Image (tube, rainbow, N blue to C red; front, side):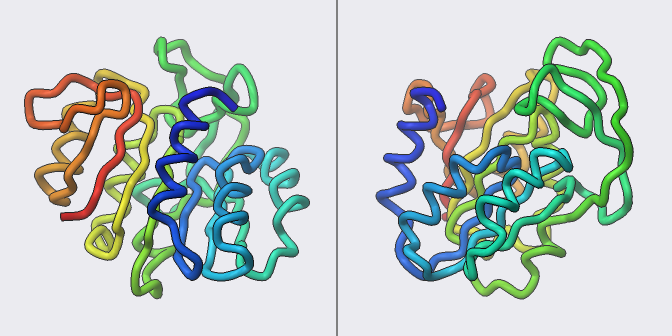
Length: 204
């Protein structure tokens, strides 16, 4: 866990309340899921979603018996079909885009069930936070919330690729009408803003 995560935990602690619905996309070994769990104190609901089966198994061992936490081995994307996934340099960098952030090709591991968030979350009345850390598939995840974005209060997202930034920025601030802050410099993101590695977005 790095200083960015600690700062994000402090930010999220100010807005999350008991009873909220929270979604950890790219949960890895569960740092954010665990933080959510502590705040909710057995209330509300947490969706904890991890791509790699081995990492998912660790996540499920930690949280699978918690009554308010649902752990899924899915690839969150813009489709509900099976899709390929690829090996990263470590457990934090596996992804579904087939290359790393330097565009070096990654080895295919296999195929995994894709899921759109507007399918997974269709029965939720409100979602307090979507946390998105998906190693370059951010635009695909955001395409998959088209049916539920108006029910999402906040998005915390890491944006890894310059090439996708225009599309990501346009979806967030123009199509979905979120107000977004670059957490690196605390400036509001507009149509001219360069890529924010981490940004926090509030539904207007």
